[in-house]
Length: 180
Image (cartoon, rainbow, N blue to C red; front, side):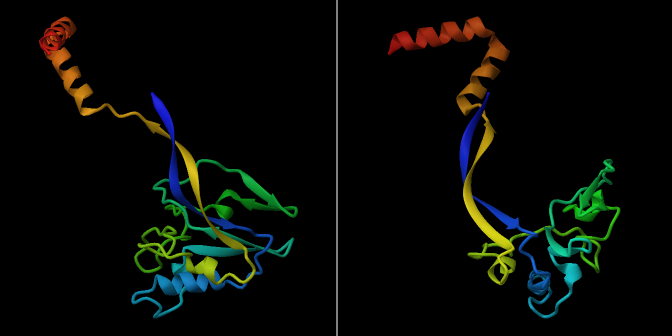
């Protein structure tokens, strides 16, 4: 039976396209941080965050790299921004086999936002240096569903019931409790 519990320190990076001015500082810092050696070069193709421009509304949409998927999406929906249609892939956060977005340019391995590594800094670089406040960093508690795991005693009792039968185990426990 599942139970609910709170996970402390769930970290999220919030992106607000309405505030983004398209400076791409987040892309530059992220790519420099992930260069080898660190800060040795700037290559936006290595960045775990990308800024897309919507011509119609003249707005910028920052998108953070999400989890990798090994398969092509089956959905074919479109997103409408300012009367212009964007394919499902345009605003997708996942690295997938169909497109080059969010893959290392040299190795073609998928990349994902790691919030600037372990141990995580107070704020990721993209948030720290975003002058328009389009990127914010939140640490909060989040309620999650957790499966109850059987304790060791339960596992042991189940295996005894399987081996000797329920009645034999009940009789033995009853006999043992009378001794105390």
